[in-house]
Image (cartoon, rainbow over all chains, first blue to last red; front, side, top):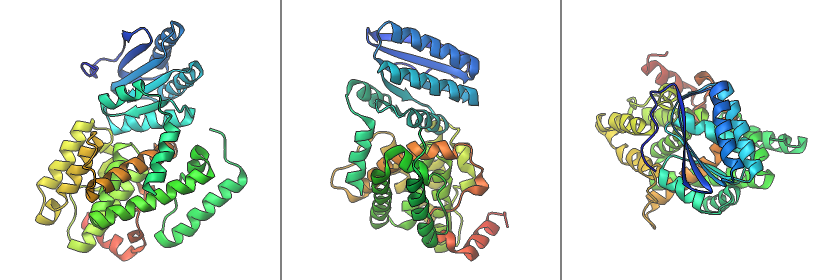
Length: 142
Length: 212
């Protein structure tokens, strides 16, 4: 998985391609309307070249403005439409909460959020449907 | 997310109202649970919440149970569950020991802005350096963070199974709760246990915190 993105920069998106169909998108700094658009553009370009598995590493995000949240919601919608499998990695509870909100709002069963990088990797390598997994957890824990 | 039909909203709110007669609080995202999972699975999730809480109380005790749920909600960025269950743990601890836990529910929103490592260090440090009664809670705090960090728990160990079950259940709940409470004000967060009905205890607790 490599190093955590640098949170001291104002905004930075790095796209790493460990395989032709998979990318790791590392985001650092503040996510707002403009930087959200930049992120969407870079992820969109990857989807156009045939990427099907996207790891959005948001551990370097220091803040996310309301319009940044909106941009992330739109991006998640694009990922759903493209049929991509998505994993988010976050560095704080506040950002984890934001990704839970984005994923639930999109109703994308193939997107999930994680704190631990190995779990994010496992998710991308699996074919698990998040909603089916949740129902199984509920049955088990009732 | 498409809004739930009127009968679903009515049924969920009615259930929440009936439950509030027992607990003293209502749940701001009760309808969102059904909108996210459908009516049948929403009721199954409510059942899993009760089952998980019962398992935690049997394996660890009431204060510890609320701490686990508070840590799970805090970890997920849910203001309502994070601060609400820590508030309940505080009231129960204060009633039992007559002293304050170091983790104040009014800190939770700030803690949610910390990195995960910093959060773990901060909270475990608070419990490690407290009174004997406070230190007795350190095992549950430490184990909860270890399981949040990816430890799968020891199979057949009732205490681990109880924590894992609660974390899985609250992870699912918080997927749909966060939307409604992401920017909630702390004054709108109740203590999420029946102890919230003990208004005399709350008054004494707040006075002890210097908020009387």
